[in-house]
Image (tube, rainbow, N blue to C red; front, side, top):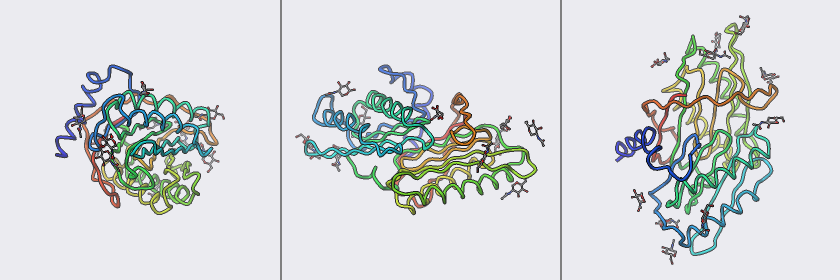
Length: 284
Ligand SMILES: *[C@@H]1O[C@H](CO)[C@@H](O)[C@H](O)[C@H]1NC(C)=O
Ligand SMILES: *[C@@H]1O[C@H](CO)[C@@H](O)[C@H](O)[C@H]1NC(C)=O
Ligand SMILES: *[C@@H]1O[C@H](CO)[C@@H](O)[C@H](O)[C@H]1NC(C)=O
Ligand SMILES: *[C@@H]1O[C@H](CO)[C@@H](O)[C@H](O)[C@H]1NC(C)=O
Ligand SMILES: *[C@@H]1O[C@H](CO)[C@@H](O)[C@H](O)[C@H]1NC(C)=O
Ligand SMILES: *[C@@H]1O[C@H](CO)[C@@H](O)[C@H](O)[C@H]1NC(C)=O
Ligand SMILES: *[C@@H]1O[C@H](CO)[C@@H](O)[C@H](O)[C@H]1NC(C)=O
Ligand SMILES: *[C@@H]1O[C@H](CO)[C@@H](O)[C@H](O)[C@H]1NC(C)=O
Ligand SMILES: *[C@@H]1O[C@H](CO)[C@@H](O)[C@H](O)[C@H]1NC(C)=O
Ligand SMILES: *[C@@H]1O[C@H](CO)[C@@H](O)[C@H](O)[C@H]1NC(C)=O
C-alpha cells in the first residue's frame, strides 16, 4: 500500500500537477489532500462548515503568527490551524494565510482533511483532533539542495551544533511562539550556515523537541552534508542554507530557489513519531 501511495506521489510531481489542477495554479511548496478521512460532496454541510471555519481562522491569530479555530456547527467539529514562519511580519503572514485558505480548498475540494505548505506559512484542517497538539504525521516533505558541502562531515557537524542550539531555544519557547533562528560560521572554513527551526506553539516543549530532533535526524541520515535543506511537518519545520534567507540581524531575503523535482529517496520515518502516511523529498 505504501509503495502504491509513494508512486502516486512520484507521478503527482510530474503529471498530476498538470492534469488535475485546472482551477488554480497551486504554488504551495507541497500539499496533501487526505482521502483517508473521507470525502464530502460539494455544498453539503461539511463544506459550509469548513467555509465558516476558515473564514474565522484568520481573525483568531495569537499575534505571533499562530492561528487556530475549531467550529462545532453541525454534528461534527472542524479543526483548523495556520502557522507562519517566525520571522515573517504580520501583514505578509496574514496574506500567506489568506492565500492558503483559498488555494487549499480549491486544490482539495472533496477532502475533509488537507495540509498545504508554503515557504512562509502552513495551513491544515481536519475533522480530527489529531492535527492539534499531536505528533501525528500525515504528510511531510524534505527538500534538499543538490550541492554537497566541500567537506560534508564538517559541514554536517557544525550544522548539527547549530540546529541543536536552535531546537533547545525553540522548544523552550512559551505557548505563543516556538521559533529560533541563527547562524554559525564554520571555523576556518569561510562558510556560514543559517538556520531556523519552529514548532506550532501548542506543542509541549517535549513534543516540539521530539518533532524537530526526529525530523533533523531523519533528514541528515539521507541528506547530511547538503548545503541547504528543509523539512516541513504538520507541527514542526526547519530550514538551513549557506546564505541568509530569514529576517534577522541581516535582512537579506533572497528569491526562493526554483524547485526541481527529482526521484524521491524516502528516508526512514522520524523516530518518536506515530503514523506516517505520506512523504516525499526532492532536491532544490
Ligand atoms: C471524519 O470524517 C470521516 C469521514 O466522514 C468519518 O469516518 C470520521 O469518523 C470523522 N471523524 C470524526 C472524529 O468525526
Ligand atoms: C475520495 O476521493 C478520491 C478521489 O476522488 C478517491 O480516490 C478516494 O478513494 C475517495 N476516498 C474515500 C474514502 O471515499
Ligand atoms: C466555500 O468557499 C469556496 C472558496 O472560497 C467557494 O468556492 C464555495 O462556493 C464556498 N461554498 C459555500 C457552500 O459557501
Ligand atoms: C453528520 O450528519 C451528516 C448528515 O446528517 C452525516 O452524513 C454524517 O455522517 C454525520 N457525521 C457524523 C460524524 O456523525
Ligand atoms: C523583513 O523585514 C522587513 C523590515 O521590517 C519587512 O519589510 C519585510 O517584509 C520582512 N520580510 C518578511 C519575509 O517578513
Ligand atoms: C552529494 O552527495 C550525495 C551522497 O554522497 C551524492 O549522491 C550526490 O550525487 C552528491 N551531489 C552532487 C551534486 O554531487
Ligand atoms: C566545524 O568545522 C570545523 C572546521 O572545519 C571542524 O574542525 C569541526 O570539527 C566542526 N565541528 C563539528 C562539531 O563537527
Ligand atoms: C570568504 O569568501 C568570501 C566570498 O566568497 C570572500 O570574499 C572572502 O575573501 C573569503 N575569506 C577568506 C578568509 O577566505
Ligand atoms: C553555497 O554552496 C554552493 C554549493 O557549494 C556554492 O556554490 C555557493 O557559492 C555557496 N554560497 C555561499 C554564499 O557560500
Ligand atoms: C549571526 O548571528 C549573530 C547573533 O547570534 C548576529 O550578530 C550576526 O549578525 C549574524 N550574522 C549574520 C551574517 O547574519
